[in-house]
Image 1 (cartoon, rainbow, N blue to C red):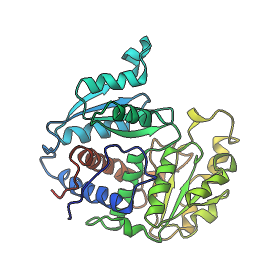
Image 2 (cartoon, rainbow, N blue to C red):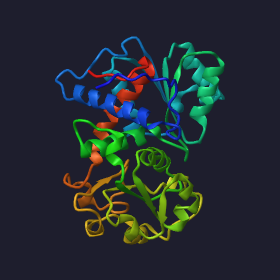
Image 3 (cartoon, rainbow, N blue to C red):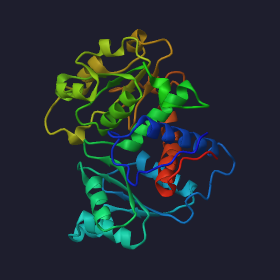
Image 4 (cartoon, rainbow, N blue to C red):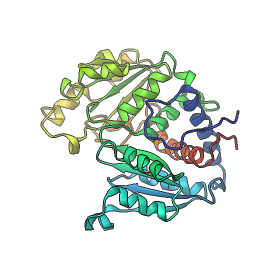
Length: 326
């Protein structure tokens, strides 16, 4: 596998990623995926680095995945918990970040419920002249780059486990179903999938899918069947009640009846269709339980596994500046 240069200090959005950069992430993640299959799963790639996880918002998969990824690369890890931090005493978010900078952090992984916080921290780190890399682990309704990249890796490895690459998705139909309006995952996936030449179709009630999403290069549907017709992959999204400021659906039962993914609904897709969900899943709402647990159809557990390899790749690229073959 070719070694490619990496010029990004920060990873804040997938909007300006090139196909070459997506391929570099895929190839590097593939190498680390092989490492994770070995008996000894730890490598000394970031042995001298300090990674700080600044999660101002609750998380299970993303936080633990990043922490495990950093430890697999032999980096030191500092965890931040807002509930027991000086934020409760009036400290600002930027001052918190500068505290970790003073402690010698080389990379900060930032998650926040408000859009733009990772970008603000990155701008402040640049202003201070430091070499700290900021990685957006999800900000408000804006983006979730590492989730978009691990979804991309999961899709490509399902097609070619040996050599995942962006080209594999050219002409593939990917249906994304659910709470598009509030989903940072949908936005990151839209940028990466359209860059790879995939045909992205969005489906949701009109209250959760504004027509403005057509500007992302997607086809929108306010009914489910046209989005699913001949789809190669179906990605379902969680209904984000915590971000909804008003009642946008009649009921969970009604939502499932009209937009829930079941085996019967998948009959209009391609025979080899696979289903994804970034988690956590509301069983029986976005996705039927039997479908979620079926390894022949579901890639959900592979998404979680892919998350560690992809986040290892991102931390390595940010920390070293090169793609690698191990």
